[in-house]
Length: 264
Image (cartoon, rainbow, N blue to C red; front, side, top):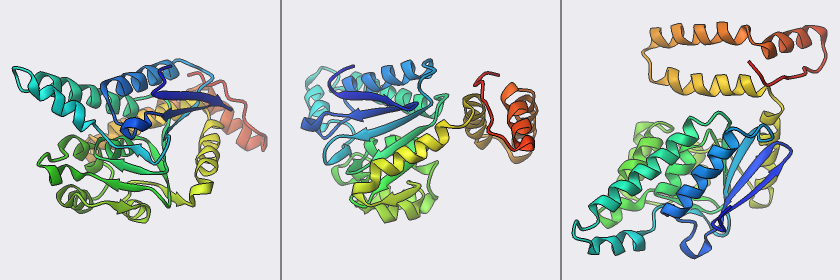
């Protein structure tokens, strides 16, 4: 694991901590590659049931590194090829989180800016400390946060997303909660404990059930209403035929704890 990304597994919960304090945990090419590698490895690791993304130091993530971006302007194409590769890598990282078979929770203690805010919005759940701050400040420097807009607009109301994008203002944790960007806000000293309690609760469920549900959640959102019901009816039928659904229902009826197989 690169020094940019710290990794630890505890009770089925994989904690991935962005640890590039010199750039405020920016989403450099190296950082995004390290995250994708860790997520890919976790997808096939049965010991990992839930993933937590955190940031070391005062920033969750400052987004893309503007110094790197500026340095690439010196090329003959003024950086066009590099910019395209950078945003494609970022899109693949965000899609990798959305389509990951395991739940991903953002633990946000400090500021999440631009693509860092996009990273929070791409996670399945997010918990913020009272000290957390959120912004998409690209408009302030002539670079609209168009790619972060994709994740924000799918997690928040249009007007709240547009307020962040058009003003570039910094919003507090309570605003992020009101906007729907995070699930809950805790005192800073309780942040990790709150996140781990949430992660452990999810980790106690059948993983094949969680995987089925997460996949269906994202797919049905893109379907018209009638098609969404038809699709989810098929999913529920398939889910009912799985061993863990049979076990879970039997355990509920018998009033005993279920014994999950985590297999279809």
